[in-house]
Length: 318
Image 1: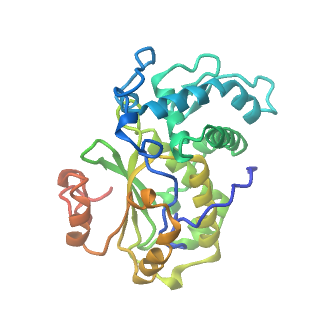
Image 2 (image 1 turned 135 degrees about the horizontal axis):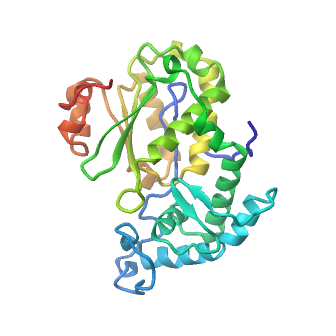
Image 3 (image 1 turned 45 degrees about the horizontal axis):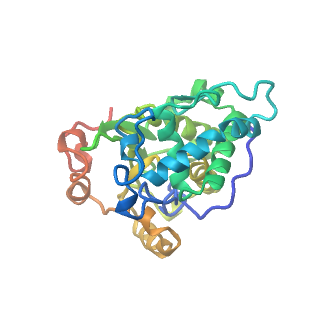
């Protein structure tokens, strides 16, 4: 598996081997839209642009940045696919086809604005992030990873997509505690990374980029202890976090860390100052037990969509 070395980023959680610091420390969806006067309707009109419910929420500043980045797609593709004979062939990113020769599409605009928001609407930085993402997906051989069959007895209970939030966001669970065989899961770090990326891609398949373009993540650390950490876990955590920081921007609406051990909780708050405030607003550290967890999750997820173990009324995972 060949992949470019990710740019240096702050530590972020992916598995129980690390403290739960946000895995995508990028500005929130409001970045670059500081004033009400910039909101669409108070400035430029975008009546000539293909629209969907998500693009109608763009600010004028975001539209200007999207148009500038969109115009650079042929150069971005040429850079990302330098080794390919056809550097301008359309590609599919997160289920959305991007054609550099014909990029005027509402869903394409939704994808592009994610890279811009992650880089505070700085087009040059968003351009690099997008080019790096496209190149990484090619080098990682993502299409082959999505076809790979991972052993159910090792990874079957590690991740679940279950229910939706009150705003329509799908809810994705990462279960890192319990009776998981950490040696089987993390003994082959490259295999774990392939599984983790495949699970992220499957989670993204639940987004339509017309009405919903973000998910809610719940990381459950029940049963995790300092003694359960292994070198494989640490390596997997570091590498997975870097991948999600660099190549999956602005895909999280909220993220909850539940059943967090005390030793991880205090380290989380120790690192809080290293994470942008806008990002921290998306993250919540939650205690243990259905009542405590439910009090935090039920404002965002209806009881009928939330498993009983987390304070809801829905059946547990199958």
